[in-house]
Structure formats: C-alpha cells, structure tokens
Amino acid sequence: MAFVGLAIPFLMGQPNLTLLGTYLAVPMLLAPLIYAVQSKNTDYLLEMKEEYFKLFLSAYFIFFSISLILLHSNLVRPYSYYGVIAIMGLLVLAQILLFKSSQKRSWIILFQIMILLLDIIWGVNLNYSFFIERTDVFFHTWMIEILVDGGRITENFDLYSSFPLWHILGASAYMVTSLDIAAYKVMYLTNGIIFAFIPPAAYLLSKKIFREEKLALITALLVAIYPEILKYGLAAIARSTISFIEVLLILALLYNRDSRRIFLALLITVAIIAYHTVSIPFVLIVLLLLYALQRIYSVSKDHRITDFDYLAFAVVATLGYWAYIATDLFTMIINNLTAPAPTSISTESVLTAPFQELFNYLQYSPILFFVLIGTLEAMKRENVSEPAKMICLTGLLTTAISFPGPGFLISKFGEHFNIERFGEYTFIFIVIVAAFGFYTTYLRSKKNTKRVLILLFVVLVFLSVSNDFVASDNPIVKRPFYTFYLTEEETDGFDHAGYLSEGRVMVDFVTHRYMETAPYMEKIHILEVDPSENDFLRANSSEPILIRTGELDKRPLKLATIEDGEFISTPTMESILDYYYPEDSQLWASLEEYNKIYESNSVATYI
Image (cartoon, rainbow, N blue to C red; front, side, top):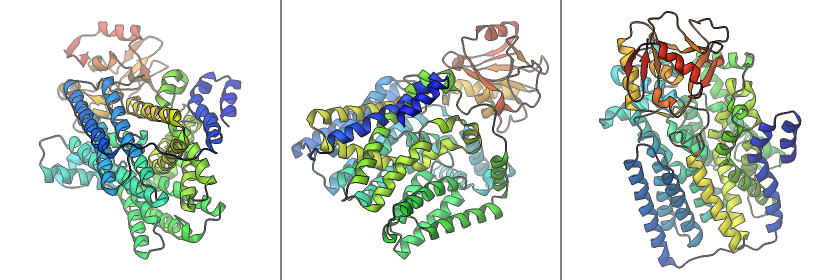
C-alpha cells in the first residue's frame, strides 16, 4: 500500500503528492519489518534503583519551572520552550519505564502528565492577548457575552440555539468566578481544566482493556502530546469537550453487561447529542466501525463494546433531537449532502507548498509506526482480550480518516462532510494502539534499540508541540496560514476603524471574522483584489482599507481574488479567498497611492 500510494500520484504527474505521502509510506514500510525482526525477542525491562525516582521527579519540576519562565519572559514562545516540553515528556516516560509500578506512583505520574498538557494549552491560549485558533472563537465569545449581558439565547445564536450548553457553561463560569479577565479567557481556562482530565480517563480505559499499569500510563502520556488533543485543547470551541465525554462513553460501554453502566452510557450519549449535536454522527460512525469489526471477527456478545441495541438508540435519539429541536441544523445537513462539491480543493497548500506541509505532518509518522506495530502485536497475541483487539484494529483503520491524506483533498469531504474533524473522535482508539505498539516494541528491544525508541519519542513530542497547526506563533516551519493570535495593538486598530468609519471597512479574512460580530457587523467588507492590475477594489473612494502590517511582515494575508476586476458587493468568500504574500510587492506598493489615516506597529488604515 505504501509503494502504490507513492507511485500513483507520481505516475499521474503529481510528484508533490508523492513527496507528501512519504510521511505515511515510511512507517508503513518500516513497521512490518521491525515487527518481523523483533517477533522472536524476549521481553525485558531495564529498571533503576527506587531512590532515583525522586531525582527524575525533581528534574521534571525544574524543567516545568523553566518552561514557565520562558513563557513569561518572551513575547513569543521560543524554540527552546518546545525543547523543554520534550525533556519534560522524556522525564515522565523515564519514570514510567525505569521504575516499578505502584498506585501511588501512578497518580504522581498522572499529575505530571496533567500539568504538562496544561502547560502546552495555557501556554498558548492564556499567554497571548487574543488567541483565535481558526477564528471560531470570535463567534463563541460573542455568544458568551450575550448570555452574560442579557441572560437569554437570542436569534444571534443561529444554529447554536439548539445546542448552547458550551456557551451557557462559559457564561456561568464567568459570572460565578467574577474573574477580572475577558470572557474568552474564562472559556480557555474552563476548557483547559476539562482537558487536563482526559489523560487520567485514558489511563483508566487502557488499564481496563489491557490490565497493564505501565501501558496505561504511556497511553495517558501519549494523549497529552497527541496533535488533535492539543489542537482542540487550544481551541476551546463548543465541540472540544466531546473529546473528554467520548472517553467516558467508551468506559461506560465496556461495562455494558451492568444495567447501571448501560444507563450511564445512554445518558452520556444524550449528553453528547444535546451538548454538541453535530458531533454525534462522527462518534456513531466510529462506533459503527467498531461494531462491524466485532461482527466480522465473531466477538462473543459478552465481550462486545457496542451492540446493535445501543446504536439503534443513539440513531433514534439523534434523529429525534434533530427533527424536533435542531430543525435548522437538520436542514443544513441535508443541503450539504445534496450540494455539488466545491470547485477548489480543501487544502490547497499541499499542492503549492508540499515541503512545508510535509514537515508539519511529520509528527504523525512515529504515531502511525507504533499504531501498525501495536495492531500486529494485538492481533497475534493470545493473551490480548477480544475488546482490546477490536479497539486496536479500529485505531488502525481510523488513521485513514484522521491523519492528513487523500480524503482531505476531496472538496466534498473537506467542505461539506468536515472529514478533518474525525481526528477529534478517533484519537482515543489511535492513542491506545500506538501506546501498545510503543510498549511492546520497547519490551522486545535490546538496549541500543531501546535508546533509539526513546529518542523517537522525544522527537515525537517536539514535533507535536512545534508544528504550525498548534504553534503558528513560532513554528519550526511555517505553512501558508495566518498567525493564531491577535495582539492588543491589532484589536485596538480594528476597533478604531470600526468605531470611526461611517461606511464599510475593507479588511482581510481574520479581521473580517473579528468585526463580523457586534457592533461592527454592518461596517465590514472583505478586501477585494484585482490580480491583473495588482490593485484593490472598492465601491467608492471613501471606504478605508485596513492592513495588518505586523502580520504581513511574517505571514500572508487572506483576501478575495476578483478575476474580472469588478467590485462585488456581496462576495461568496469561500470560493474566492487567496493568500497574498509580502513578496507580492506590486500589490502592496499600490497602497502608496492612498492616504494613510491610522498607523501602529501592527495596523495601518488607508483611504
């Protein structure tokens, strides 16, 4: 499959896709070979004297303190911060592998994993003036402010009026705590606390499945550095919390012979439907795959994680909720299913900047390597339970829809089916099998190979926290994308333009997302570009043009491309947005013909 996956795009004249596919092909080629070479090795662990455990523990908190100092003393997180996080992950891994297990020690290790995850999450979204991730936060912040000010769900909630619990939680936390911070900061604070408990939940799930303490702890550690967990932990949007609730659901389903546990599983399912109803189809697709595998492999009823009765209940409850409560959402889903596919691909940068994309996908390579070995080990071992085998196989198969790959290039999948969201709902299966693959490979490896595996783990941690998807403030390699935070100077410039302008303000995509919420929603327009003339388009000369000059110094700005050069009063932004780089000097030079009426280090406004 690896060879065919590389050969087909090359033969079709797309060598850039062949290059990009190497991050999947290399582990697919290596994992079976490593497994075959080690299959006859005996298991053994290197253990250290107990008194050294405190030394590793002390070292962890020293590096934790260093990470906080780096966050406090730098405007932007330096590369050294990523290195410190990698060392912290290494120290936790060493405590797991090099010392005997005990319940007390496990809770100490879990606490370290929890604050490691919080260090990464809060070190971004609470560190910068206004962390925006993929700009959804603007809308969610506005909804929380509406609830805080008026205490009611208004028509501005739009589709979220049928599932506003995340905003109610955020508003409640803001009002109860009375913290002197912005509403969105409380949202990040709340989401961080929730995400800190995902590693312990994953630990309990893995321990229930494999009954192996060290493996359960490795699972928790991998959760804390898994790309999708970091992404949604940072984002703090409405569906983020489903990552935690889903782990609880799988835990409850493992006890499905107990009537109380069955009731708990049904209750959690209803909670997912009501909390973020758009998430339930993704969860059900994953569970349906698990159910199909159980039937294919003839898993006994007593060992099935999910069954037909549960799936039938979940489907009926979802359709009922959509039909009677979330009717607008139901209509939108039907329209998306029947709508023609967009003309552009979902991720154009894979074609325009394959080297940058490849580097930012590399964290998935060691994960896939361990997933493949973990699946082979699980399916071959007689002492691995049937539920564990099915979870491992589900983890392997769901990498096809969770890792960046061919499916992300299909516009219908990317734009209408949101295939990229699957990573949030499949992470627990992938992490469990990856942890099993790492642990079993480590056990069978000789001393030098063990060192290589530990080094590979350190590289995994470093790549997971420094890629452009979760570290666009200062990534190792930049993608053509916008920085995921706004400075105070930028928001001051937006507010100044929105407040003083009598007409529309011409702005880039990120500024448009910021200003499309009250009170500026009637005063903004996406800045349009005539590519043939390298000039900006406006309805009249009195409409100011706002440029994020600070962002343009390091990143491109996303503007609307109008091929025929005629100004469009109500453009459909999804189909015409392009990135314009600082190197597009002729376009930016055209601003010299305008009068500059506002300037700061980050924003300039022209008329």
